[in-house]
Image (cartoon, rainbow, N blue to C red; front, side, top):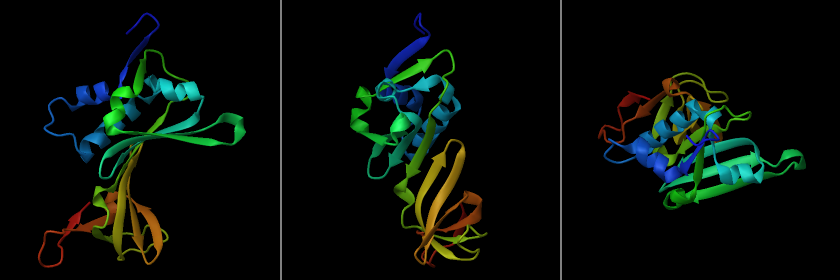
Length: 182
């Protein structure tokens, strides 16, 4: 820690440190990274975002064909919103500050994992407006802070469902998919 109580590094360096001991950082690693940052949110900031003066900041790791960092926030009293995106290859250019003293307005850390897109599941309990027993299609798995939910769709409607409200069908089962708990 420096004399002002702030240690500055890069997101790439942070990912590298936290990935030590893992063969390949994957979707589960990105969720662990976001959860670790969320647990320490009161002590983490992104200097480029702080320079913009954003409020109500949400830092999201998007996992689709590649990992991206997307930061959104409000532009104070102007009513405007801003969104900044970095592909994984640019994480070395994203500064991360670790503060000794807690911050007044910590960020919210989240993930959106699209690797589950298109998989089939059955709702084991209602996820309004969708009823229990309905066959659904998974859209994504999200974490917001410590909360994990799937976004599901059926019959032109969408809902969020916790993992224990779904029985995900196994795509490798030649019988059409034996259910596995989410």
